[in-house]
Amino acid sequence: MTTPISGSTSGGACSRPEDDSDTPNASSSASTSNSSKATSESRSSQSNASSSSLDVDWDSMPSAGPSPAVAAAASPLAGKAAEGHASTNATRTTERDIHGGPHLAAGLTDDKQSAFVSAAAVKGSYPDGIEIELGSASIQVGRQSEVQAGAGRAGYHGEGVSVAAEAFTASAQFGAENPDGSVGLNAGLSATAASVEATVKHSGNSVTLGLAAGVGASGSVGVRDDDKDGKKEICARAAFEFVIIGGCIELPTFVRP
Image (cartoon, rainbow, N blue to C red; front, side, top):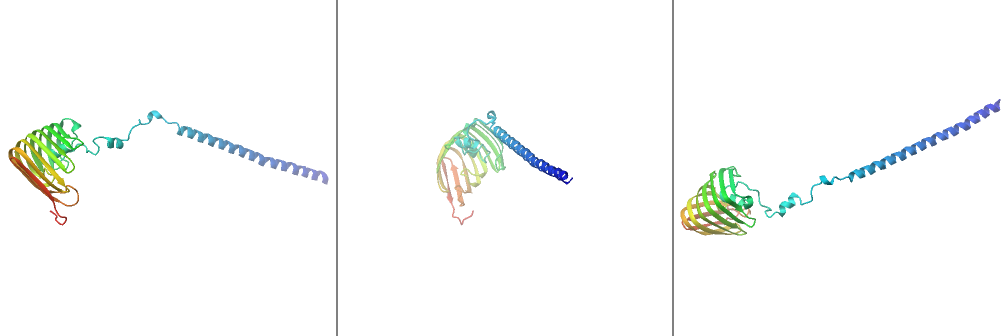
């Protein structure tokens, strides 16, 4: 009886290892299969991702061309500020693009110190510094008060020199914003058939001379820093009958007007 029990035990022992060895192999095969499947799915996912990343809707892309910044820099009016409301009629002409067409504007000046109404058939300046004003009239009240009307004005602002001429104009002014760019006090009343003047500048210093055919007088005195070097210039200007004269002198650093 010992032998059958031993044989049965041995047989069981022999069959169980075979079953045990089959189980790990099956698990390994399943694991390998699952791993292969996962790898395949991963590759498929990566392939889909790559395909989607290359799926560009070219119709929705912006048209080729320079960026707004590049286009602005390439413009012949690059660096010219948009039309603003400067503190005098003359400076509004300098700041305005002449290609803007006929001029009609009303409102407060940029410093909020004066209110104005202005109109002109032609008004503005070119990038090279030439400016023109034709058929102009304006009224302004406030920090700088002025009334003016004119058939024509023209000028040029260059590096170190400027020229201005006008024909059949009339004006009256009182305020703090002077024609030479200084701030102080100005007053005047005049009617001019024709006038021309030129200003030469070096550093902050300048000299203005001109001739006019008309009646009336105007004058101004003030302070500015035209070359932005921290040294103030004191300025004075006068126009009487047929003579226009003015100038600015840069003061030493220790003088603080």
